[in-house]
Amino acid sequence: MTQVNTFSLIETPNMLIISLNNKTYNIAKDHRNFAEIKEALATENYDVIPKLADVAAAINEYAIDSGIEVRDGVVYFNNRAVENYTTRRLLTMMDAGEPVQPVINFLSRLIKNPSRVAQQELHLFMEACNLTILEDGRILAYKRVRKDYRDVHSGKFDNSVGQVLSMPRYEVDDDRNNTCSYGFHFCSRSYLDHFGGERLMAVAVDPADVVSIPSDYNNAKGRATGYEVMFEIEDGYREIDYLESSPVYYRDSEDDDEEQDDFLKYYDSTEDDLEDDLEDDLEDDE
Image (tube, rainbow, N blue to C red; front, side, top):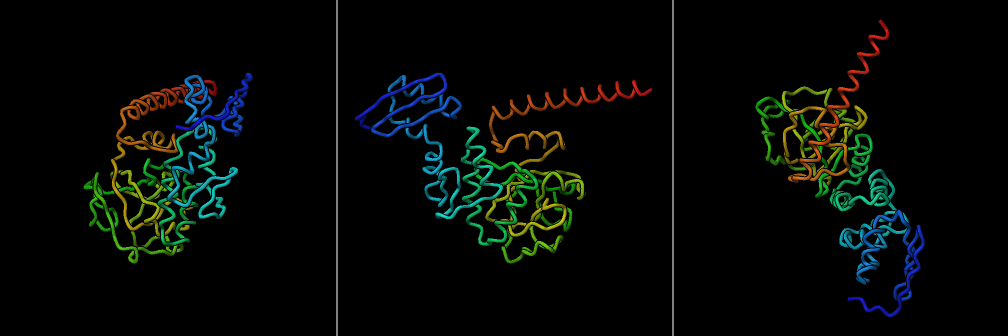
C-alpha cells in the first residue's frame, strides 16, 4: 500500500486537481478513468490513482517486456519512435478509452517477424483493409475454400474449423510483386469478390508468420507460413459487417453473442428502410 505523505484535492465542474505525495494529477472530466478516479477518492483508495490517471503508464506496464512504450503521445519501440497505421490506431483507441491490450499484443507479435519488409507490408495491409484483430493480437482475416473445406487451388489442405495449417517460411514467396505464388493465403473483405469458393472461413493469422502482401488489389491479400481456421462465415457480408464493426473481436463471449444479435437486428432494419426508401423513390419517378 502506498504511504500517503501529502494529499490535497481541488474539484471544479470540469476538473479534478489531485496532489498526491508531491505529484499533481490534472484529471479532466473527459478522461477515460474519470469515474474510477472519483470512486477511488471517495473510498480513499489512493494506491490506484497514479495508474488510473496515467493511461500511458498503464500501457507501458502491460507492455514492459515487449520494448513498446508510449511517451508524450508517441509510441516507441526500443527507444526508437515508431509512426504507422497500427501505432496511430493504438493512440486513438487509448484516447477513446478502449482496451488497447490487443493492439499491444499485435505489435508484440509483429516485432517477432524476422522480416522488416514483411512488417512494413503488413502495416499497409492493415491500413488498406481496416481488419479486426483478436484479443491475443492475431489478425482476423478471410479465406474462400471448396465445399469440402479443402483449399481452392490444390485441394490438398483441410480448412475446416479448428485446423492449424503451417509450412516452413522458406517455402513462402516473399516477393510482393509475385502476386500469385507459394504460401498460405488470406485476404480482406475487399478481395473476396475476386476469388471463388463455395465456403467462407475466418482465419487467425499471427503477424509474426506473415511473409508478404502482394501488390495487386490494393494490398488486400497476404501470404503467410500458416494460420488457424477459427469459424465459418455463413451469413456473408452481413456477418463480416459485424466482425469489422469493432477494432477487436472477442470470441467465445456470451456478451459478444448478444451484441452480434443486436447489431444484426439493426443491420436488417436499416436494410429494410433503405429498400423502402428506394421503392418510394422509384414510385416518385413514375
